Length: 146
Ligand code: HEM
Image 1 (cartoon, rainbow, N blue to C red):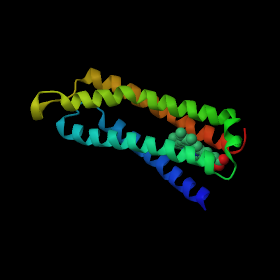
Image 2 (image 1 turned 90 degrees about the vertical axis):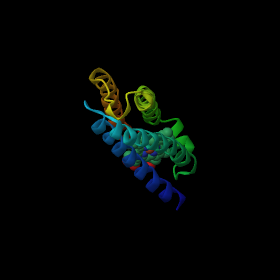
Image 3 (image 1 turned 90 degrees about the horizontal axis):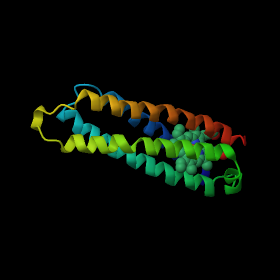
């Protein structure tokens, strides 16, 4: 039962994280102004929260899952998945810092993020999406003992 509950939560969190990442890439586009910056800030906070919960639930699956922790820690695809997840986390640092700076920028209600900064953050977000796509691939291989 514990394994089933952890699996369900793990999948819901993983899909939610993908959704939140998609929302960020949709919002971060030229013309981004004050109103959507507030929304983007909230979404980025949810993103961090979901990622932290995924680490917690993922680690719980390693320890309390049906296969036992030894199944994973000697499995290279488990570590490939961990590296990909860590890389997504690292790639998300720059956008989070930028979003916080944009939210704190002066200029009042008329403030619009410069296009060059939007382009830079979009590159990070696209890289996050590309690496994120590797995670379910490694997960499927990992679960089958490759
Ligand atoms: C620290 C982070 C994570 C840890 C420790 C972790 C750990 C695990 C574990 C132990 C399993 C069980 C595999 C089995 O049935 O033997 C699993 C499955 C899975 N994980 Fe994660 N996970 C993490 C993050 C993620 C993320 C970010 C995604 C996003 C796509 C993800 C997607 C999946 C999928 C799709 C499965 C099911 C694989 C299958 O049964 O074919 N995981 N994960």
